[in-house]
Image 1: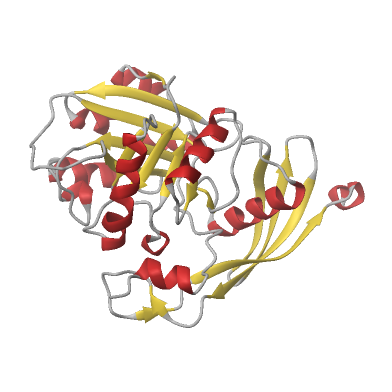
Image 2: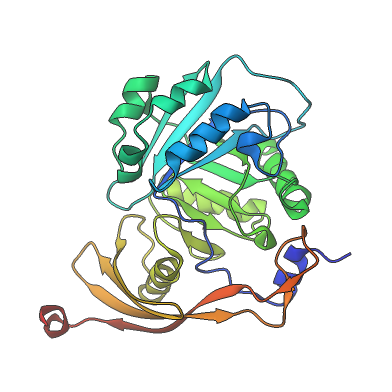
Length: 313
């Protein structure tokens, strides 16, 4: 039986501009089984999960559960859990880590401040410190959301861990099941699809040096989807791989067409025209449904560097 990821790949569906959007990620370790809505269907107290969802609503913070790669027996509640917070906006990207024994401590965080890129309350409440290890490589493996994530994501996470790659975690949800196996790399927040172990190792090697790999990239979670596609288009056009070099500074218009302004740290700017299209022919967008759909796609129509006169006008 064909899967949503097989159909997407066979139809050569583009992946740029398909990343989940989140200025800040909050990750809580929760071993054991996960349900489709993991915050309220795992060994995490569902009341805590619901409260966390409510607290993060509208703040730019996205919460996910993580666990180490491997078999996931029904092992109950861990004594100490790892927690990470990562802000992904260029120029202020950071990754903080802490350990806690009670997830209810997360309810005291200032989620609005986290979304703005301020980590003082996170540090103060949890005794967090700057993460000094390797970048985090988060592989979506939640088969209860889509079987492709389990069939393709879990083997990838296991292979990376077995080969000695540090910072590998399984994660509950990154969106875009049909691009499985999907990957998110922190602190910079770039997502990837249809990833293979050798490519992940190259991606992480670049991140350690502050560089972003464009091949297979879905976009930066810091931006909305038109901005994701625009930023990747500029990176490709000018061969720019420095993580903090580009920012999306303006998005004008509305679906189905936008004009996105992308700025370089050296002062250059580009106007990128992005159009919303539909991926045809219809195909399953998820293995969890038999309904065929035409997923939205971000199509870059033009990339134009702005002159000094255009910037002044």
